[in-house]
Image (cartoon, rainbow, N blue to C red; front, side, top):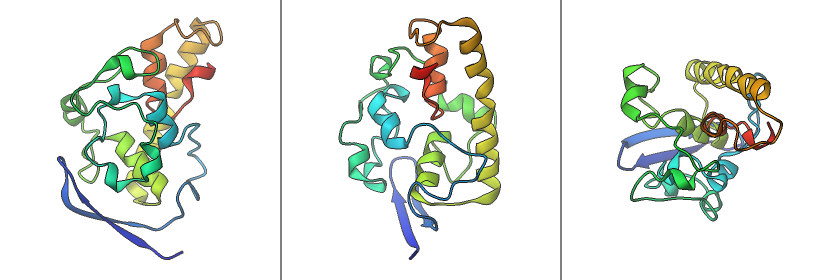
Length: 169
């Protein structure tokens, strides 16, 4: 595979470059098995449609073709479960969850990882965080009838934000 360099220039990041070292959607860490691709997540409705609307050029156009987006503002009605399940970015920053290379957080990391970027130390950290969502999945399974989207919709939406298919719970 020929390595591709991606140059980023958007509202939150400018002058950042990264190299794609793996084929798109391939060669994931064995501990990381997301159920949804970034494209599927954007089509289902995540992050109130606001997430990464200014950097669509960085990712394949087909990811955005049927995405539920709202460039003007965060609109919880665009989320699959129709509720707000996001904390402000300021909370993520205060908790130290934001890596300098991915100022938008986990989903930006996942999109870039999916595209083929690898950062071994950060990848391990983000994959650990992804696995930790299992506790929320366990709560939904314990407390909700299977497939009942009206049971714990906020928690289900949060699970969806982490590339688990919360519709199947």
